[in-house]
Structures are given as C-alpha cells and as structure tokens.
Length: 552
Image (cartoon, rainbow, N blue to C red; front, side, top):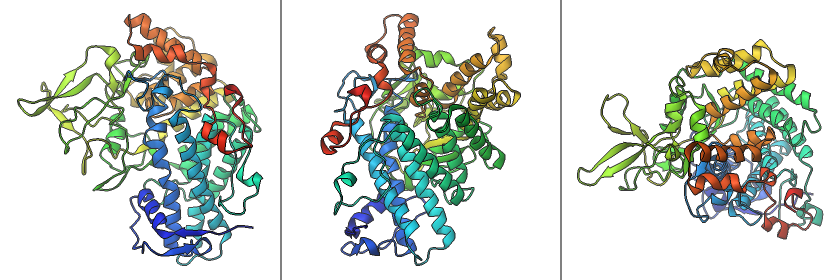
C-alpha cells in the first residue's frame, strides 16, 4: 500500500525552476499552497513539473563529477593542481576512498534522480486520466522517465557495481525494514533492469525528442547499445545476456540509429562543439545532451570550458574566466597526427590567454611545453583564425556570460560514438568485415585521415581482429576525448590500471623529469580503482548494504 505524504508546492516549484528545460514555460504557482501526494500529477502542467524535476537531477551529476572529474587521471587528462584539497584531486590521483566527497556526491545525486524517476514512473503508469494530458503525451513522458532511470542506474552500476535496486517510490512513512534498508543487488540484475527500462522506453518514445535536451527513441537505442557493449566487457563478460549476444544487440541498436537517417556527422568536427558553446541546438550529430542553459539570462553553472579549457585570467566580472584544471597527457597529444588530423587543433589547446593591464587587452600566448597543453574542445576564448598573422583573441560564447561557469551543454551521446560502437561490436561479434571498416572510416575521413587499412599499412601494422580493435581504441580517444567516456572504456577493456601506469611512464620517459601531477596517477592506481567504494555515509545508514568486495 502506497502511503501518501504532504508535498509543499514551494519545494516543487524550486525543483521545477532548477530542472526546467528550454521549452518549458514557468508556471504561476502559489508558494504557500500544499498538495497531498495523491492529488499531485492531476494536470498536464503538474506532470510536466514532475518530468522536468527528473531531468533537473542530471545537472548536479554532469556539472563537474561525471563530465570533468572522471576524465582526470585517465590516459587523456591529469589534474594540474598541486593540492589534494582541490575538488576532484583524490579521484584524479586515485587516492579516493569511501570517505571522499565526490564518491558520496555521485552516489547521492544518482539516487536522488532515481527517486524522482520512480515517483514519476509510478504516477504515469498508475493513474487514470490526467487533465489536459493526451494518451500519446503520457506514453512519451513515461518513456522519458524510464530512459532517465536507466541512465541513473547505468552510471551507478558502472562506478559502484553492486548497488541497491530501488524501483518503487520512496516515502518516509510506513516502510518495512526491508524497504528502508535495501541490500546490494548483483550488477547483472541491475543491468537486466536497465535493459528492461530502455526496451520499454523505446516502445513508448517518438523517434525524435519532443524538444532539445529531451530523450527520444533514437537516443534510447544509442544508450542501450552502450549498455550492451559495457555489459560484454571485462568485468561482467555478458552478464545474464551472454557476451556474443551483447555484441549482437549493440550492433542492432546502433543500426536503428544509423538506418533512421535522422543523424549524421557534421562536415566540420569543430562545429559540433562551437554549436554547443554558442547554444545552437543543431542536433544532427548529438543525439542527447544535458542542458545547462535555460534561457538567455539564466546560466545553470556548467564547468565545461571553465575547468577544462584554455586558461583565461579572472579580470572582469563581465568577461569569462577559465581555471584550466586539466592538462592533456603527452600520450594523448602524441596520439594525433597533427599534420593531417583536423581534430588535433581543436582538441589540444597549445595556448593560454593573458591580460595586458597597460593596454587593457587580452593576449594569445603559445605554450611551448607539451606538459602544459590544455583541453581545447570547450574553449571560452581563442585565436581568431579569420585574422591572419594576428594574435587577436575571440570570446566564443554568446548571450549572458558568467565568469565562473558556462552554459555549454554536455553531450551524452554523439553519432560518431554510435559509429565507433558499431565497429567495435561488429569486430567482436563477427571478426573483420567490410562493414566494420567502413563504419570507422566515416569518422576518420571527417577528420581528414585516410581509411583505417591505409593508415595501418602506412605504419607497417597488419590487419587482424586484434590490431583492428587497437585502432578502434585509439580512434575513440581521438574522437571522443574529454567527453567522459575514457574511464569507462578502459575499465570495460580490462586495462584501466595497467594503461594508466604505462601512460605516466611514457610521460616520464619521453619528457624527462615530469611534474608531480603527471606521475601521481600512475604511481597510485590499483586494480580496485576500476570501481568506487560504497560511500561511508551509506554504509552507516543502511544496515543491509555491504561494501564492494574490492574495497573490503
């Protein structure tokens, strides 16, 4: 029996304002009114409030933890701050434990999102008619809620592995001990639920999302392909589905996106990210992203461009600044063919911005030391390439500017990732085949590179399923670098700790006496760092939960 409790509409209004998507109009809500839980979701407006509240829980997760901190300390980026008190430092240097704030924050923010999603799904499934909400809208909203719950659980299971699987709305009344203190579920069971949720979402959702930032059928297909590819990986080897079946299903769901004709690679790689920096919601290549801009005067506090981007001094409240907390690893820089690969100049920022007090102007400064190269993918400012032979600084953002944060949307899923996932899954499922080669070549040729076979021949590498997989791994790094995928890729390939150790040895061997921030991740990383420990707060509160075996 569901126990209803009073909900203060003021709290819901705050959540609505935080979670509102760009197309949502703000409702005229009386802040002193209260609704019984059983009376909420009575209208279409209230249903939309509930849904945007679920979406709103993506922002705290992707503001810095899943978008920035998990990329630090991989083979792509290192934290360039000396202090262990810097936010993200313990994650970046692999010295985190069950007491680390970010370990707790990701857990708490994910379960908050799941709680919102469970409540929303319960009401979309279990109520009769909702005033003003058509049956088609109800199905669409329900599909979105299911896809969002799947995403929250997917992040949890990849990071903490064995997590409680809560599917019912949570209330603080009349709970039995088993409902309140939930034990860990096996990771395989969590994956089964994620697959069920996404299958159900695909059956309900329209092919295209109802607006920018919402999840549509094709994005759900793409996310499910990523789920199957992850489940097939080293830690679970197919789970309850089976390894080869996982690869087959990953190919199937990638093909659903590709055959739709709705998505494609933009002609220019840099345009994909300029569109995000300048809030041009052109979704041909991006299937789904987390929205950090609500309207022209509202900035929801993203860290892309501020924490990872070329450094810009903080000199004016009306102009952007950038703290540049990440340095590109020398291995990542050397992975590019700088003379041919158009992605190199956009991804790797060999410059910073300074300010001339005398002339009151910003100046562009080339960086000669490779160990100081910054991430260029989300740049707030850079060189104006349309003015030859002049170091003229251009600020790329448009509309409202906040010097301490950005409105850059975070891409959850891009079409190039679909192509690369398909190539990898095909190679694992069927071995070398022309379709897999053609798929990866689409990505390479957009970047100005020759086809993968020609490229391997140039370097004297013979073609086999094993060598082709290595090419896919490197191509994912070049194409998707700094987008939050690398940690999860290395874990599913079973080479997380070994890879990080080798990359930091490489930095020392190639560049001599390296700085502490290049050595620390490789010196500290262990096999257990593939996953996070269950936070200590959860262990103390939940008497039925057990710590992950790797962290006991």
